[in-house]
Image 1: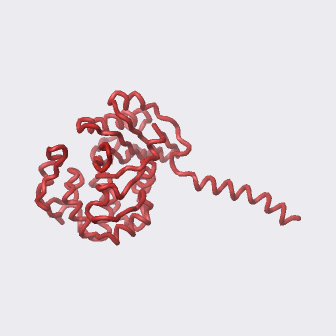
Image 2: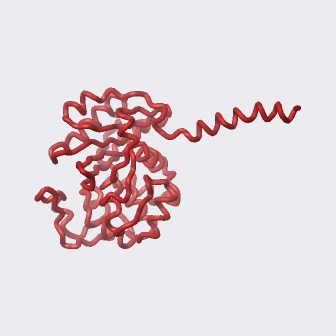
Image 3: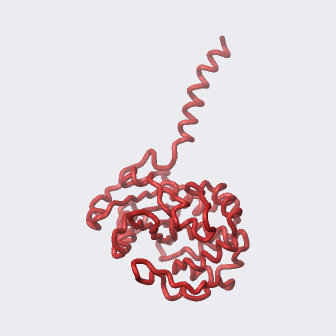
Length: 277
């Protein structure tokens, strides 16, 4: 009888714990009032912000946040870590990655800075989003290593099939906005599996796009062209004193000019939630 009673007491507790651990980031969100920002841009989109200290997930458009898209150049964050960790690139400033001689075009126009048209160090490749440099890095890393690192980190669908230098561009690898938040939380906390502290410190250095006495902003854009409509990303994290705010947003980009709205919208939301002054 005592065992039966104990079982009756423990079973609900186990189920409750399982329910808590099975709940992904984003299922207990606080809504963000970002509709006017996306409406002003005339596009559909989503943004998720995770407040690390308060364990709060703030979301606009949760349905889209659960929809997977190609990560495009936001994958350069993880790709940099993998390249450094595997030794595919020796350091961020001196080991130059080669250029294949191809100028990247989209809608008949070059889409990469001129700095990408030549051999480039990892720091500059990340800053300028140099696709050829990261493709060269990918060929050094190899599919087997990518499968290991992406699987361990549960990065999106972890699909690395196809050419090793295109899987994050051609629609094979897909990730939701919630999954971006999961990965970025781990990256910001230096807790991505299989990655050393040295590689994390190097990424922290080269991912900075804005630093003031009040806050530091680390972020990366992405422009996915493998779907019916182009999708623009902006992801990263803000550290402000003892607070860290991880964020990820995407929106439809029916025309290239919409790309500028990524940062405009995200910065407005980050101010709204107290991440930026």
